[in-house]
Length: 75
Image (cartoon, rainbow, N blue to C red; front, top):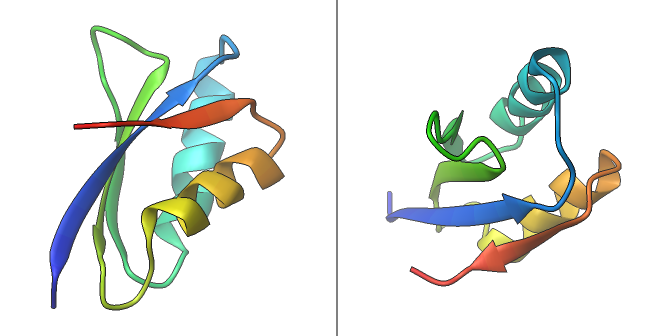
């Protein structure tokens, strides 16, 4: 396992139901360990994942496929 993480900035304001749905969808992506929204900055999504199985671009594309405008944030 090669642990990695990514921060994804969502341009859209999201309600609790939409955030929960997105985290649920991401948690089913192979290699995702945990998706979590920042409680202080609710438009920031932190995703921990196994870089041997998936990558940041795949996760960003999944977020976009769910209808969100988003981009990767460099750490």
